[in-house]
Length: 254
Image (cartoon, rainbow, N blue to C red; front, side):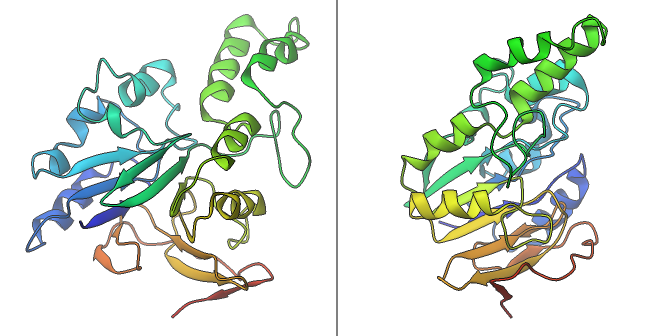
């Protein structure tokens, strides 16, 4: 089975359509790495993939709630997305072509957790009491929007802890691991605890491959690019951004 990993779409489905149209044969499965920004339902937007018989899995990014609850529902509400909802991989492991793929959506948010600092909050059930301290300083509508955003798009320790008890071959995350200059080693640690040999991430719109000293491998995928797990490019997307030097303990591959 051919599985393509697609970096942050940011509504640039035309790049994906053009890339798919140029292939001799379509991949079997696509994994979207977040920041899809669904102004319509994902089932509708992913038509370039679904119409070609390509199964779709996905995680969410930090921009998937930019349009508020309606944008989020267009991505994550199963009743709106009967075809793509089963592919939601955040917080669980899916077997795709015999490969166990785990998903961690979202990004770190200081109100919840900003590694390397310890978490402020562990579980979502703690959020209402924490935000109650802001009542009187923020309008109720702003607090409700913040609660929604943090509740769905932040990386929560409870999700990381739950994932760490599972086994996977690949961890897909929106947030970058410790290889990237702005990444977080917590994600490396999670991959190791799960037995994963590869982390594939989006968020920073960069293409690179890197290895840690212990053999853990990272693949970064830029916006709307389609890339295989070995780094082979099926199609290009938006021009990648500069990355800077890798963190200590990592080296670029190729």
